[in-house]
Length: 324
Figure: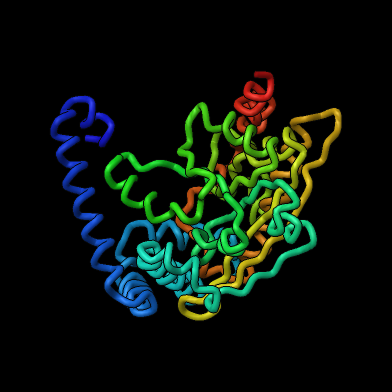
């Protein structure tokens, strides 16, 4: 029985389960915060490297990697996926220290192009778009340390108790607010961007109702909302990536792109979305063990309906908000 169905049939039982899970998570957070972050990250990463391959998702990641790198030896693919698990284990441990890591500048090296530097100086509104590389939560660290109040967008957990426990750790990252995905979110984002603010969201997640763009020589489902928002508000997109350089040390890079503006709105959105994914792909190729290969990113062969749907729905949410 799914969690949603159980919640409808047994609301009191679900509420009790949520409380228990929330207490367990808060206890885990308290425990992990007693352990130095370097130790916690290394231990958790090592455990995940050796235990996670027994998870069914390990095979999925290997399949995705084989399709992306068809000529790569099997042993090398296995090492990359194990490296992915190690990185995810480290991220899990580091999440409990996220507020502390933000203040430890010695762990970070920041690289920014001219437009990104203007954003960091508070001179330019923008939409930060990142992907699941290394510890992606820390992608906004340079902006936070410069005093920017970033508005974040995230997918809320189904357990509200657990969701509150984790979002409280991110309060210092998103002082402009942390918005869960909903029908009202687009309007709030538009308001923030048009008033000169900065919004951050992930850009590599699967969106079957979006568009399909080339990604590792295959069509992949992509979310057109970042391009729609940037075009509607006439702001640049700053693509960000985090590279784990050594343990709990990172290099953070920002690269700005502009969404084209022509008479064909949907073509502009699709072109910008394709450009985003082309850059993501080039970055993933540099550090394939730091990206989440478990994503069901690619479209099945012959599935092209998403392109037609995009003509109607790529920016429907944004467009309706824009008219209000």
